[in-house]
Image: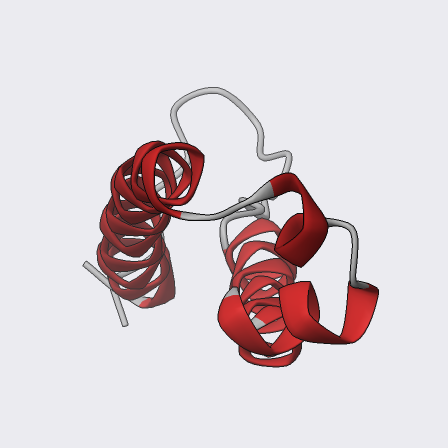
Length: 91
């Protein structure tokens, strides 16, 4: 199978990455709730650094790009042919 199979495989890989991100995020939030003070959490620059929000933003942008590629590559083209016509050969 051609590009659709490849796109589905790559998209599945990205979904697994999303699962990992959410699982990691859940663990991080639990850790933060138990280990940091309200004063620390009230300091935006501290939160940005501690939660690595810049890297998380880049990761989500990569996921969005992969989703867009999957959508573009998973579209199926078709040709209308008269019933009984020979089917085209697979590429």
